[in-house]
Each structure stands twice: as structure tokens, then as C-alpha cells.
Amino acid sequence: MQSDFLFLLAADVLLLSHVLFVAFVVLGLVLILVGKLLGWAWILNPWFRVTHLAAIGIVVMQSWVGVICPLTTWEMTLRERAGSAVYSGSFISHWLEAILYYQAPAWVFTVCYTTFAAAVVASWFWVRPRRFGDAPTHDGARD
Image 1: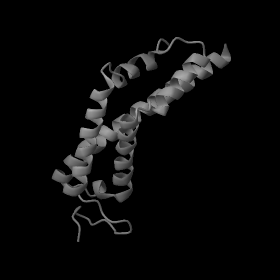
Image 2 (image 1 turned 90 degrees about the horizontal axis):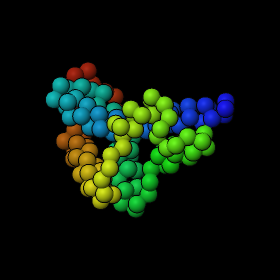
Image 3 (image 1 turned 90 degrees about the vertical axis):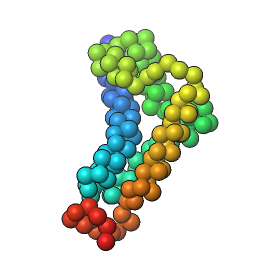
Image 4 (image 1 turned 135 degrees about the horizontal axis):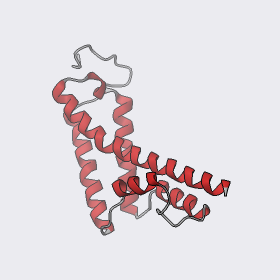
């Protein structure tokens, strides 16, 4: 009984992490574009930008090769280990899964992910990040 609760809790934490990953990818691009217009210097941070680009790159590569996201696989394994039906458990999992998972053919997701990744790459050129080691300026502009 106690271990079932812990497995479900771990699954919910993993699901929340998955949602936060998706939010980072989606909102990251929005913040980059808005930050360009508002002159936010932090959006030029190369660590943020490389991490953001790598995150969507991983998603796109997984979709191209037909690999299910490991976060989804691990979460499902934890729920099954707890003896719970997949996504029937807690309040948290019920609402977070509604945000995260949609029903559509795999090719639709591949096209969406690839298009979004193209927008992230385009933002790299429109909103050039600072080079590693360059200090940020006060007004957000580069020297």
C-alpha cells in the first residue's frame, strides 16, 4: 500500500516535470520573441538559448525516429508498478495529462514539432544570443 502511493507520487512528479519541460520549450520561444521587442537582456543568455534549442531538438529527433518520450515511458511504468490504471490516479495526473497529451496521428506531431523547431532556429538568427563569455550590457543590446 505505501509503495503504491510512492510509485503514484513519483509518477505525478514525473508528469509535472514533463509539463514543465513542455512549458519551457513553448514559453521559452514566446519569451525570446517578446524579450526581443521589450529589450530584455536575459533572453540573450547563451546557456538559456542553447538549452532551449537542445530541448526542442531532442523532441524533434525523437518524433522523426518514432521514439516515445522517455518521460512518458517512465511515468507509465511507475503507474503500472503501483497497480494503477494508466492515468486514472490522482487529481494532479488527471489535469496535467489533459494539458499534455492529445490524440492525433504521429505524423501530425512530427510536423508540429518540426515547424516549432524551425521557429526556434529562426529566433536564433533574429534574436542572436550573446557568445559564451561575453558580459551582458545594461540595455540588452550587444556591443
